[in-house]
Length: 270
Image (cartoon, rainbow, N blue to C red):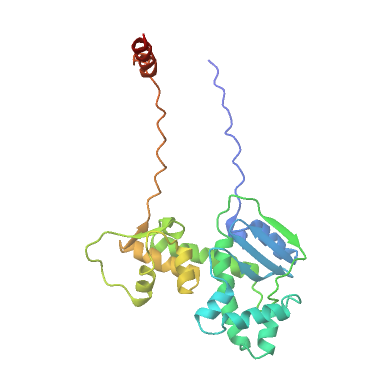
C-alpha cells in the first residue's frame, strides 16, 4: 500500500494591520493622503473633503451641521450664517469671512469645526455597502480652517468604535427608532442623559435626537449606549409588514348564488 502525502494548501495572504497606519478604516483614504490629493471622497454615509492629503471638512446626514452646532451654543445665529455663506461661499472662504468680519473668534471657529469634522468623519468612515468615489479638485465652500491628518482621523475613528463597544456591544440603538424600556422605576440618570432620554419617543433615531438637542451625534450615541446598558432604552422592534389581502375565491363545491337567483327569476316569470 502506497501512502500519498498531499501538501497543505498555501495560506491566504493576510493584511498586516500593524503596518497599516489607517487600521484598515479606509485604504482608499490612506492612498489619497499618501499622494497629497485634493478633492472630495464620497461614501455611503457622507463626504470628506481633502486638501493636499489632509482632511479639511466632513459632512454626514447622521450629524448636525456646523451651523446647527453654532446655533445651539449661541455662537452664531442662523441669519449671520446665511449672510456669511452668501457673501463668501462662492469664493470658498466662509470661515475666513466669519473671522475677519468679527462674527466669531478664530479659536472658537477652529474648536467648533474640529468637533464637527471628527463627528461627521466617524459616520463617513463607518462600514459601507456602496462603492467609494473620489472627485479630484473639489473644494468645500467653508474653506480651510484646521486641516486634520488622515492617520489622526482614522485613529480617532477606531478609538470611538472601541469606546462604544465597551459601553454596550449592540449597535442597534445607533440607527433604529428608539423606545424606552418598560421598567417600573429605572435608576436615576445624569442630566445629560436625561435630556437624551426625554427625546426618546419610539420614532426618533439617534441622529434625530442629536439634531433636536444640537449636540454632536457621536456624543448622543455614547449616552444612548449607556442608557441601553442600564436597561432604559432599546431599539424599537421592526414594524410588522401590512397583512396580505385575502383573495376570495369561490370553491367548486359552493353554489353559484347569482345563477340560482337568475333561475328563480326565470321561474317566477313563467
